[in-house]
Image (cartoon, rainbow over all chains, first blue to last red; front, top):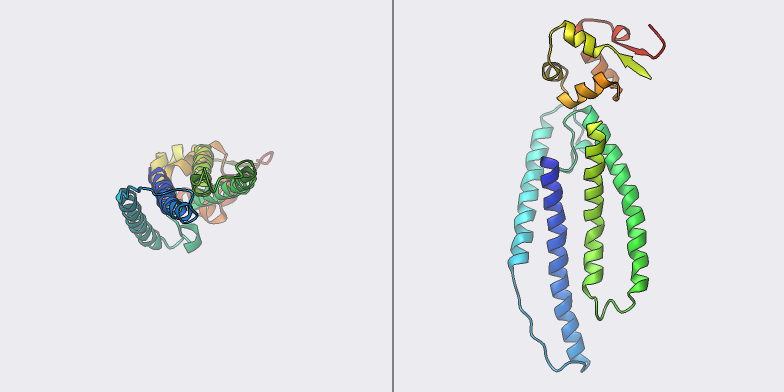
Length: 160
Length: 67
């Protein structure tokens, strides 16, 4: 349950950061278009809800991480590198081993996925004009997809 | 492949998987995997199990084909 929760929170953190960066870049882009004379004016609607979500999730994740570190610190057999992130399950030696395997799978998947994402920019040559959201959300999707792949790998290996 | 007698010894000592997990400091799921033979424990965990059952390690864990 903790694993699901931390992965959902971490994914939401990246999504909210992606939305915030997108909003900022979109405004910058409109100013750029205005400066070059492509548009006569533009209007923006500033919503601070995403920022609140981002700050809220960051605080919750930091608290969870501190609780996790304190809780695991009491376990004399656990090593710091095994539980540095709340996503890492170090409840016993089998969990540590499975976490290591799941991280290896997720890393391999991220390498492949990043390759595909980078390649996809070739097919959207005008992304910086018409699809300004594309680089933000594809970049945010790299850790999210990696986390989801880690979660699936962990659960499959743990159930064996 | 490593074979173990954890399930048999646990039954003999009338322990539940949860009880054994608590005694050896792992989760119940790890005991389940150990009994299924899908997880090979570390030397430390094997020693903890041997201590609980008061048996030498080689009497609990042995390679396939050995008695």
